[in-house]
Amino acid sequence: MSGLTRLIVFISMFASITLMSEAQYLLPIMKHEPSKQYYTAFDIGSAEKSYATLVLDLETNLTWLNCRELKSLSSLRLITCKSSTCKSIPGNGCDGKICHRPCLYRQPNPLGKPVTGRVVQDKATFSTTDGGRQLSEVSLPRFTFSCATQGLSLPIAGVLGLSPAGEFPFWRQVTRAFNVIPKFALCLPSSVFDVGHFYVGGVNGYIIPPFNGSSNPIPMTLTPLKNIESGKYIISPTSIYVDGVPLSLNPSLLEGGAKISTVVPYTVLQTDIYNALASAFTLQAKKIGMSEVPGMAEFPGFTPFKTCFEEGGSRRNVEEFMNVPVIEIGLPGRAGEVKWRFHGANTVVRVLETVICLAFADGEERNLLSRWSLGRISFKII
Image 1: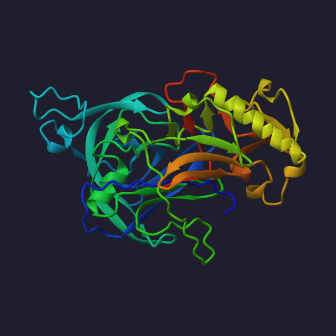
Image 2: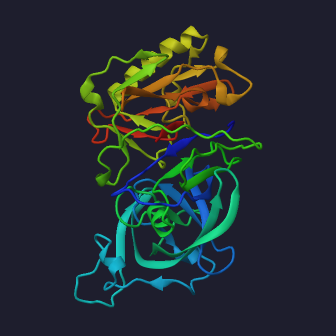
Image 3: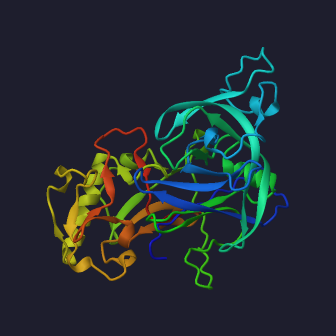
């Protein structure tokens, strides 16, 4: 598991009990270090090796990209306003009078200004999997997405929509087309030298790479999501612990819930929550021989980190298992509170050879609409 930060997002939405395939699909995940974004790549179109590289975003509901980055545009099928596909897209730019007008869609860009593009369809090709290995290739014959007039910085061509809302997030199109269980999982790499895994469908546990010929499926427990109709993945933390000791927080601070994000580099906390966490973490860190390094936030390149330490007794040969205080988030479970554990390199980030910082950021606001934005830390949403 060394070198991987795991974010497992599990979604299962059944209107009724139906017979579904247990098939599972696999796409690679890479990290783009300059932007600190995660992206995947798969073929779009009929041309061979026509890769599209797309940033993963949990709030985008229709995938968009600069189609000029595709190897061939000959097989693109333009969606018009009269089509049922266009009518299923809210805010499609059609006024109901011009039936043959191209279906347009304007949507937020998680990394910049909103984008507008023509809605199109083409073939998308990716691999099946047994949970670990890539097996045969399959094609989604009519993958619906938007050809925008702009893209992102190379090598990224656009954004892959993974929102829980709407008819056209990528995971929903795949699971519906192949009649598989509607869920997906992200196993994010922590560096540009690793490759993570994006799973769609499947019924059993996912395998955490590297595999080494053995299986280590992730156990599944149910954690409910909150208000997915909002187009966001929101959970409801009830408490926070550092080395088993609960933080003293005003319960109202947790009422807004926590939004899960793949584009926010580090978890952002409301100021009062951050201050309580940083104070408790520092207290426990000093008990294991870590000494605080004040003033790091004033140096260029160390933003947004404010709570930093000389490693001291925390250092280990394997970075993934550094001995640092354990952070847990309490969540409502079926039989009482359940805890998500954050430990080792998933709670701190290295900024100098011997200096590590608490990998949480102060939102510097006391009244955030969305109190938290949970970034890339090791946790499972099942």
